[in-house]
Image 1 (cartoon, rainbow, N blue to C red):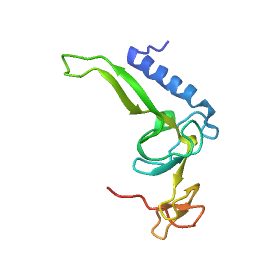
Image 2 (tube, rainbow, N blue to C red; image 1 turned 45 degrees about the vertical axis):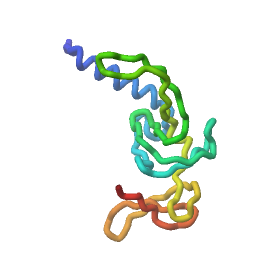
Image 3 (cartoon, one colour; image 1 turned 60 degrees about the horizontal axis):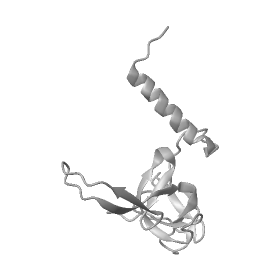
Image 4 (cartoon, rainbow, N blue to C red; image 1 turned 180 degrees about the vertical axis):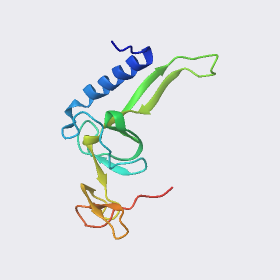
Length: 142
């Protein structure tokens, strides 16, 4: 009989929960697969209550296959004032996460929402190509 400590049990529970949350992914078999969209990319929402809106990706939540887009899926959080942390109470607006499948990348050349394809460049790097205009997608460097 093998003994599992509390930390090992907790890790197993978290792993099971993530697997259940991503069961619908298909070819990934419940595992989180890498996303082509990264923070700083411009995307257009193609499904949901904010359909048609464009915004910049603030962050990517890979485990849940969701992204946070600036100005999309605005939510309100009611915060309680805390004296110890010097936090003022009130209603705070924030951008909630939306599913990765509900957005499309916007090409920075043709300015259209598009799917992408991958090619291997001459230098051996894997690059993204716009399906609409055929140009290489270049990320804005910060």
